[in-house]
Amino acid sequence: MMRIEPHKKKRRMVVMSRWSIMALVLLLILSVSCTGDEPDPGYNLLANGANGSNDGNGQDEDAGMDSDLDAATDAEGDAALDADAENDADAENDADAEFDADAELDVDDGGNGGDEYPQEVDGPCGLMIDLGELEWGENQLEVDFADFDNQLSTGCDDTADGAAAIYKFITPPAISGVLEVKSTAAIAGQIRRGGCDDGADSFNCYDDDFEIALAPGVTYFLILESLDGDMELPADVTLGFSEMEPCPGDLGEAFCVDDSRLEACRELSTSPDIPRRFTVECPSGECVNDQCVGDSCANAIKVSDSFHWTGQNMAFFDNHNSIEELINSGDDATCLVGDADDQTLEPLDSPGWEMIFEIEDLEDGDLVHIDIDHVPQHNLIVIVKDTCGDEEICLATWKGDSQMVFEAQSAGNIFVIVDTVMEINGFFDISIEVEKQ
Image 1 (cartoon, rainbow, N blue to C red):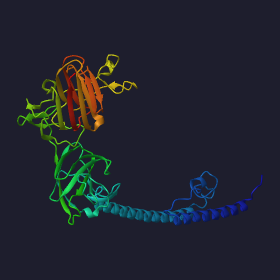
Image 2: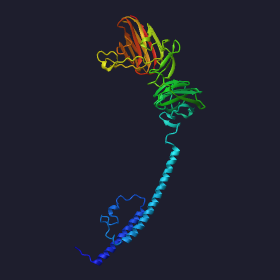
Image 3: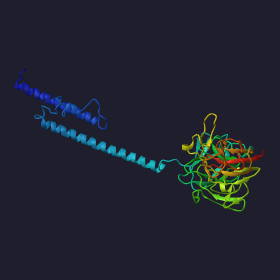
Image 4: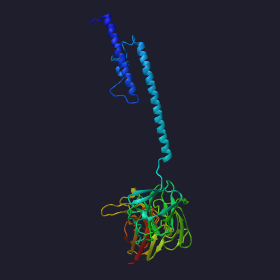
């Protein structure tokens, strides 16, 4: 082992102290110059010792002899670090204050950050006006057809030319509403649901002021079309939107206005284009006991030779649902629909608004010709029964057909029930003819 002489040891200690001081000063300079910046990932002060020594234990062998000098240097370094820290804190506070000011400006300018309506948007059908959530009460529109560039057509009038005005809106949630569209100008209107193009679900076509019931929380498009050629001035249109009053009872209420007309109020479930309250002419021209004749088995429309009627089923309620329970849909099932040849028969369920006809005084072999055009045709269900009140026994069933023939198997009366697969305001052209044999 090498022996170190005392005087050499002292000299070595002095040299080591100078190097320690220089290392510390270098560290302080680096600390000051790098204040506020992220440290180099490869430089770790703790791993290299507290005072710059490389022994890994955080202690310096010169610490005892040079404590005063180190203390003074540390104090100066600490003061510099404190000053830098204060400057950094001030800078950080200033930055935070500036950030807070910006945030406050953003809140003041944008409110909750939501879009402002109405606004022009470039949609799938061209330029349209987005009204956002339609407000209750009156909404005034100034419609300039020259602002729109689409090729849409309501189909209300074949002579209508030029672009249609498109207004998009969403109805408020939870509450159904009635929209009343009024204008002093010659305008056709149509409501479309879920889309604006000509292939979207649309409800009727109006060539004058109209009123329509709308479901809650649904996106609709109001399509307006000028019936006055190139309308030079903007048209004033008023959208009156009011909450729909509920109808009493489970099915609603109805009463005869006179001997042939029914006034009714009915809850809507699937078809939002039916007015909540309405007055209609009964199909047979008879209104008895606050219902149109034909609305129940006990009050069926009597047919002895022929019957013809064109109209909508708004006057009828769901008083009868012919249904075949799955548990009974075996060999003995009679209320099935489909094609027996390819074995696609399925249990019947007809919860729509039905019209009931009683075909009287049939003889064995007589033919009953039933011809019905319905829009939409695939929703139509026609049922023949021997006993009207028995919902699970059918003599014949058809779904989606337009022409049907039933041959009587015995003398007596039968019931023909014209129904639908859902509560829907359908258009009917019904013809029933009895062919005697």
